Amino acid sequence: MESFAPTQPVATLDAEERGAFVIRVYQHLLLAIGAFVAFETVLFQTGIAEAMFDFLTGASSAWLLILGAFMVIQWMATSAAHNLENEGLQYAGLFGMAAGQALIFAPFLYYVFNDPKNGSGSVAAAAVITVAGFAGLTVVAFVTRKDLSFLRPMLMWGGIAALALIVVAVLFGFQLGIWFSVAMIALAGGAILYQTQQIMARYPSHAHVGAAVQLFASVMMLFWYVLRLVSQLRR
Image (tube, rainbow, N blue to C red; front, side, top):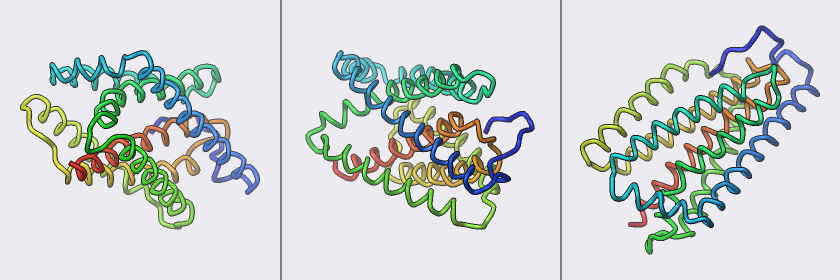
């Protein structure tokens, strides 16, 4: 999570201001999702998604380059989205994150759409599961009185371990199975719980774009691994 200048967090404001902040956050989360769909459509219509899939199929180690580039884009976009002094940079970060997610998803979605055992049905099923899971986790985060800050070290360790496993799998050519997808779904769910509480406890009322970007990254990770699990189960 980003560090902020010492400003009044949303949790200390009255109910009306807290409600207005939450509405702005989820409006911008929907904006990021809409931008992702738009970018993805362009990648498919122009043939870039197919070209990325062919490139990665021919050189599996290229996934490391794509992953590295995505991590740089994600870091830059997150930093820009949390620049509270420049609203233009915040929106650049939001759309930059949507574009980065569209690029990393493009070859995977192309594979699923063109797999006879999966196709659009798997994508639709994964989208529904992701929305339902996100809604449920959001409700839990808002209504629970338990402080979920204890999740932070576990999420950090889980993220580092997952990244190491992905790199090793790419380098040595072995498959990460169904249980890895299940574990990553749990990790994404934990991130959504933690971040939902934190944006209320730590973010000032004018940091809604940064909050939306944080949630968007976790929602997309949840969608990725739900779709991966659905496609694995249908093979």
